[in-house]
Length: 237
Image (cartoon, rainbow, N blue to C red; front, side, top):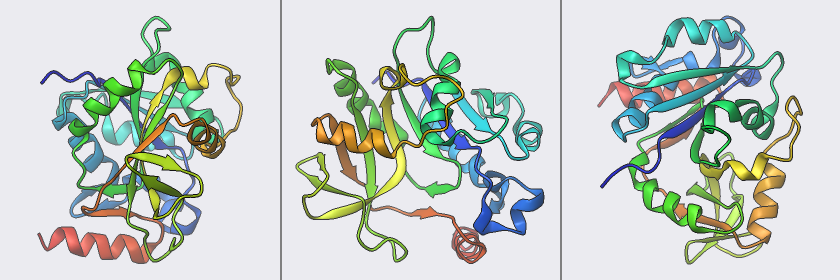
């Protein structure tokens, strides 16, 4: 099956406040677990799934990220960097990176993932979902949900028959892995700070947001204790 998905974005602009003092001198996505930086695990998985271009946005210690990862050739991908003077949050970061995500201003469905998430997720499985999104008349999204972790017991959205809901049960937690259509962000001026949250709620309310439940190994690394626990788990494999 040919990969219809070619482009991905990794969000790496955050300051990682809860990870201090580790993140005072090292950007959070470069913190290591199981012998390699968090972001490298993601790049390897995306490369294995057939992605060709991976856009990484950065703000805090961004030059460290570029120096550590280079042009991506060692993974057989092209890494493009979208530098932000100060973090523009997720939606703002996407708008800033649109020139890298779109070819000749043609709309694109792409994967976006947070740079501080670890997941044994197979990105190639999102191809079918991408085709479904491309067939929609309006811009939609597809979110990968996970069972609610201890730090987020009430979840984010309901998931019923493959569609996301603002109020239905059962509720699950967004795993910070999503498919988006670039048309969704055309109206936001470049340089605007904006989170993705309002986009989720609006798209779900319009019935244009599908979802799936992923129950494999997933960790949103927020604290030094979580980092250490994940490191031990991966090192023990």
